[in-house]
Length: 119
Image (cartoon, rainbow, N blue to C red):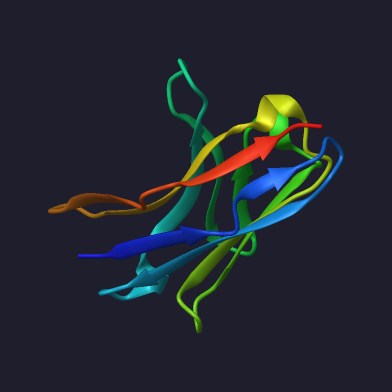
């Protein structure tokens, strides 16, 4: 079992930056594929970015070149550096931990952190 706690959300002006953190506890952090998702009001939750290792990352097209995902396995923490934020980035951002093998398939979620981009 993994417990995930996001932090770093807030209100920022268009063009600004925020850094989200996701702190994990309760299991071996390094075995999980980690990801950030977001959900805007009235919309479905969507993938933002995922990371297995520093050399294995994936980004949604709408954040490429603006957001950077990273993880520090020694600190059991994942990050999302968000630059050039736009009003359409306003959403609740969720941290996800995923693990699967031939016998198991786990997904864990944090409680979310609100990001609001507005002038």
